[in-house]
Amino acid sequence: MATMTAAQADELWAGADDQRARTVELLESLTPEQWDTPSLCEGWTVRHVAAHLTGQQQGWGDVVRFVAAHPRILRSVTLNAAIHDSAVLLAGVLSTDEIIGRIRASIGSRRHNAFVTPRETLTDILVHSQDIAVPLGADLAIRPGPGALSATRCWDTRGSWLSSVFRRLPLDGYRLRATDVDWTRGEGLEVAGPVGAVLLLLSGRPVALDRLTGPGADALRAALTARG
Image: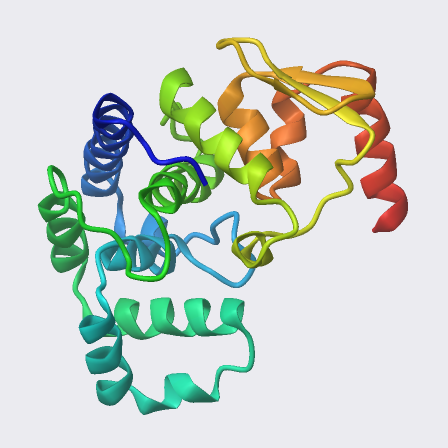
């Protein structure tokens, strides 16, 4: 993994802060019923996803303290199960105002979870904000610059443990091209659209196909339909 320059780090964190601020604005506008809306993450509500976003800055000490306070999390059998279960726990102990306040308090901070890089922190807020916004029909666009940074990271880490948190979509044999920023990866039938939609596809969210076009998008829709 290439080391980021200071300018690249500034761009990354500015993108994360922008998405955090706009996510806070959206959350502040929600009704109680909307907080309980199913998100794009299977088995997660909007509240669960928002609660998960409060945990973007955990060091190893924070993780140890959380597990000590909630030892049942050790019974989670997979990484995804542990992430889900911790989100449910947080959603159960934090009020709506506390969830919003914690996300707001992270704006301007460059701390990130001990076991990932800042690139994963950017992806986390970009993608999970869409998990909240899309089912609600809310406009919370991913900016092209941060979206391209995150899409590159997702592409580069395909097949690694970092990608294990995403649903695996059959993207081999396709050329992914963003239409709002200079970004292209892969070879084959073209799948084109806003980089935010490309990022959702790379992070295992087929709902993105609603905003993607090209012969590759059509072929991928057919492949996913056949797979069930």
